[in-house]
Length: 71
Image (cartoon, rainbow, N blue to C red; front, side, top):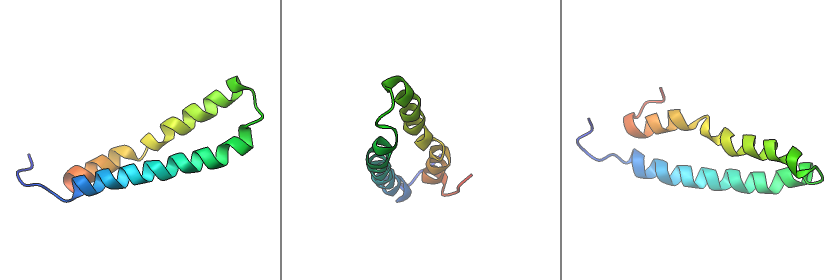
């Protein structure tokens, strides 16, 4: 159990918010021109995958925030 505060948690939260903002802007900028003409039912799986894919590196990032190690 951690007894003293660490700089990694506030820095990690700020970095996460910044990175998710950039990711959201990138998806909103680049994906609609590619699939904008598709039917809404065809677009849905693309947006679901893009909405979930950012979770893949999140586990290691949260471990780093807590322990300072990537694994």
